[in-house]
Image 1 (tube, rainbow, N blue to C red):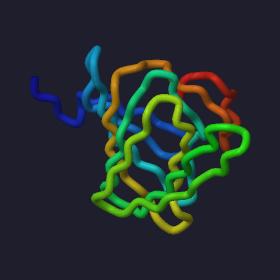
Image 2 (image 1 turned 90 degrees about the horizontal axis):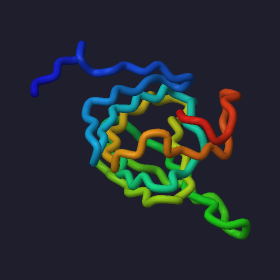
Image 3 (image 1 turned 120 degrees about the horizontal axis):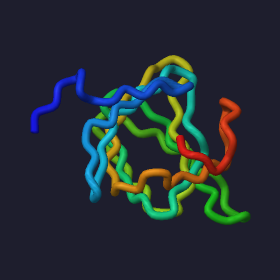
Amino acid sequence: MLKTDEDIPYIQKPWGYEKIWAQTDDYAAKYLYVEAGHKLSRQYHEHKDKTLYVLTGPVILEVGPDSENDEVLSLTLAEGEAYRLQPEAVHRVCAPPDYDIEIIEASTSSPGDIIRLEDAYGRAPDINA
C-alpha cells in the first residue's frame, strides 16, 4: 500500500518530531528529527529490540548504566552508521549543540514499552514517549 507524506503520522515532541512511517504487529519504523542541543529521555524497553541508523549526524548515543556499578558510555555515531539496542539496554539519543540530527529507527512493534529514567522536559518516568 502506497503512503505519501500526508498519510504518515507526524508527532511533535519537545526535542523535535517523529514520523511513524511503518507499523505492523511485528515491526515499526520511525523517522526521528532532533533539534540541535536537544535529547530524548534516558530510557529502556522491556521487549522492544531496535536499531538506529544515522541519516544526518553526528549523533551522540549514551548507553548504560545497566547496573549501579556501570558508567554511561557516550558513543558518537556518524552518518551511515547503525547501532542495535537490545531489550533492557538503557540509552539516550542526543543532538550536539550545533547540529540537528536525523535518524531512522527500525524496531520490533512494542507500543507503550518505554521506561523513562530521566527526562529533560519534565515528562514523568514510566509513561509513553
